[in-house]
Length: 111
Length: 114
Image (cartoon, rainbow over all chains, first blue to last red; front, side, top):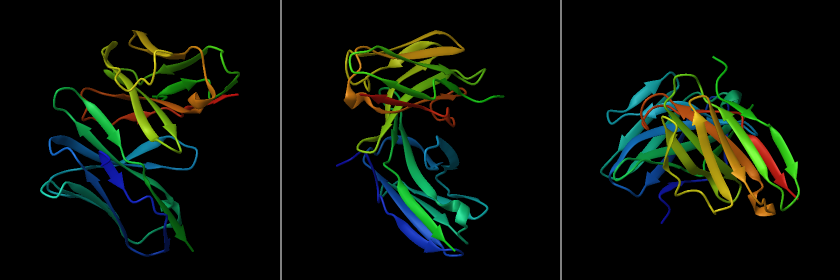
């Protein structure tokens, strides 16, 4: 089982749609979680951190479920500019720090 | 701030040659990370430094890979000798104080080994 798993997609959605991605992680001692966005041939950039209580930033909502060991990202009212690859990131801090990136979920938003 | 700076942006070399990738982290950031990204394996952490000291190099694939950070504003990743399977995009990233902080990535170096 991979340490961090994501559905690679692609997700093809029309503008205005709501889309959700999940990411599962294997280490129950994982300490911090993020969603990064990566555009084609560009570097990853932080989209948002994921907090235990859940957090929202405009059209984006992130959730953490420690019991089931997954994090989620919800995008409402999708825009063409949301088309990108979304990377789930998990930091493990027991016995040494380790950052693990998921393979990413590709999203295409169409007019 | 200019962000994380990497050079060169593109590198094409022949098998067996030495390759040196360079990174300048964001000023004041204590952590520096080197990653490799390929279609097959995604983004992999190779090594990271805290205050110029290498902390974990368990992700470095082979002895052909080495990394140094002689000061707070400069790091290198060297591959010697290079092989075609080293072809990938190599990213450098830095973060402010702890591993839980946001990592800011440079634009990457696209390496092609023929």
